[in-house]
Length: 517
Image 1 (cartoon, rainbow, N blue to C red):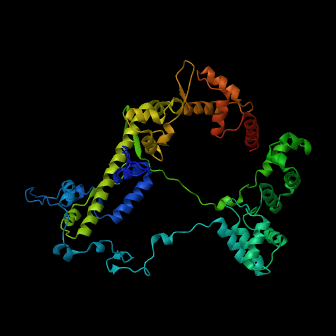
Image 2 (cartoon, rainbow, N blue to C red):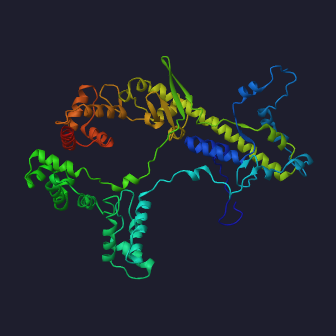
């Protein structure tokens, strides 16, 4: 019977899965890249006094030790693992205050104290007297800096023109092209200067900026970029007619050039084949991206998580020692922590110690998982390391998850942004995963292997008669690989290889360029 009309009491039973902080950190560390893990470790080392890097100093200590030593007289070092296991029990649960010994020794805040400058033999150097080494390195000049320097060194008739030029330079991208329209620049300058500016004013200043170095900068499209370079060039007397043809072609029939309609260009200008080649090669001398010479050179350095070595006839997989900082607990600070009697500080130290232990466990779990996944991949793709891409076997996340009794999401985290260094090069672990192309009575082929076959056939084709997608499918059929023509086209486009008609035009001018040289 209900206590009140319209109300009743129900009992329900449900289950919830909650991730502990340790498990959350373990998952986070697993999915991070090497650089992210190293940054995490570096940050934690700065914030957690219980963590320290495990350095191999045994050899050095043995070399410096006296020859005559007695093991019985040697001081016994505290066992860090034993202390770590018992410290949570030995820390006082309800102490009243700090011990006198710890109080007179140091305070925890002093550990993190930093006055800013480095410490030398004569004391700490102040920030005013210290200049970091990186401040002495040369700074690379960007395209924006180069153009802005020309704006500032040029004599302008009035300050408003210089302001317009600065806005124009700000709108030029790294390739050297103007991104904003004249109207947008007009409105921005008018609002900033507080006086009206016309599009004619912007165009007049733009004409000046387009004469800056590098030639062709400030163009609004490729056509204008090439024309700026053509008009600024000073051709030799024997090239004057060719120069005029190139300027007329770009000015009036740029669509024919952009669409590689060379036959129509040849008929329009009544050129013989050698003359057409000469005209096209003359235009190809100009830079379609004039700003790229000032683009910063970016080098992506990959730190492999795993290293695969060949030992005799066997393949041996190991963790990269440079990618995994070896951490350990600091026994001295653990012993000091046992003497703390203040409840608040005791709880803070307990949390810090748990954080340190969890990070070490997370790093160990990360390494063990990567080794398990890596060994399975190496075993499944063993033929790849012997024969190359054509021997790549089909492999999906489910295969690894079922074999290792792990969840697919765990395999995904363990292979994303994780790299393996092999005798054939360095690859991301995800590279070895490829869907299977079902064969008719034959062994299934991986998509990577089929792409390798397609690339090999195209590299060996006759430049004058490139292979069509249908012909490639027929050649693969002869090798026992049954792939539809549309699949060939999809894989070819994914590899950035143009169609046979486009390859024929490109090969045509490649061969003529080599012959002219």
